[in-house]
Length: 246
Image (cartoon, rainbow, N blue to C red; front, side, top):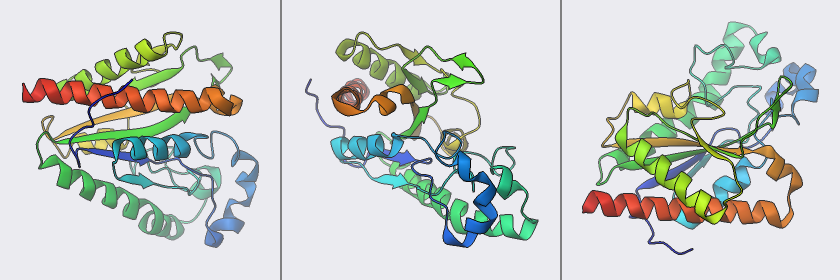
């Protein structure tokens, strides 16, 4: 599949849960959470590799984090009950304020600044936040493969999500591609926050969710899926750009 590249500077890729690294200053405090680090509670397996591939395919800037979400979750608002994992929540307020200051605020600020620059351009900013999800949650099997999360009330997001989903289905017809599953696109998250700062014409944010069963299987199938997602996104962006310019 070939597609025209989107206009330079129109897309930004982010990956909030790219790794499970514990900063040295917090190693002792986080020791009780050691067994959780390798699980989905600690990070999104495969998300970082996929984010790198998407950024390279689109020639887009990439903002990433490899510090475990158990220390602080960059995809949550400051008042969210899951902003920290169990051990970090137990820290005294001064320690948690330092975590926010050193790990949360710089990342969010950098993304906000990047998006603000792009939002002033024509046709505005397209933001893809890359995540993976666990195949089984609280004993329930999640019977989808790819989820695209967006705000249905924002036309540019809805249009891009539907075109991307259609392009994925054409290239990978066996995949179960769903809109606003396994989460609601208007739930708390980085894209939700950025929507409060920019109107629809300046910002369109989609959270990509990929089932971790593909990551666990690895090999050629995972690599093919990564490439298919990138090519489908290129095509969807080209179609969206053509519609806008037309």
